[in-house]
Image 1 (cartoon, rainbow, N blue to C red):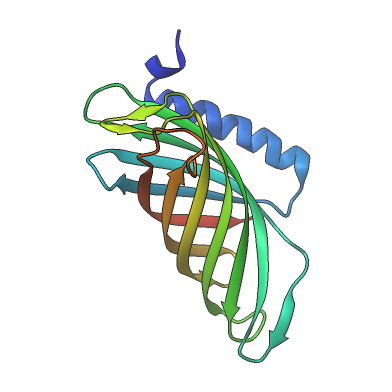
Image 2 (cartoon, rainbow, N blue to C red):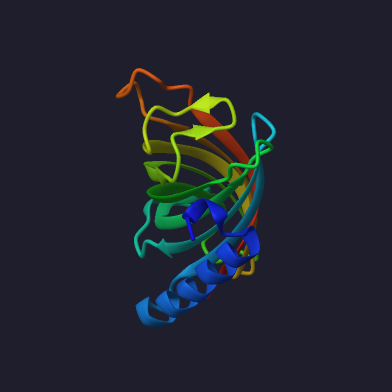
Length: 180
């Protein structure tokens, strides 16, 4: 069975099972996220990830603070051409949290640059030029009661000109994250 013939439900089931084992073995400080998105074209994206919050913050004031997290994610790209793509990514993400630490409702913005490995070099008519690309992200959201987060992200994938083909692709997501 090839990686492109695995159904989305089976992929997510396998991934969630693996992530559950990894989370329980790694730490109780990991977060789990689920995202639904759409590319700039007609491709739906389904993303799940594990986040590991940094235990450090900087520039802390009453107005907010800078912190961040490491994230590892899997994305299923469900394209109209019926040749679906999978990607794995890893990235550090910087987060500016507004307001006092521990507030019941805490808005934030975030940005990060990481790497992503794709199962194919092409998604619909977008020639990525390489199976390894950079993942740039910008997002915002609200954290509730230090356990639940909802947000939106724009993710851009590109090989940064390393290959002559570099159409790049975006995914615009809404997500939910649960903090363990």
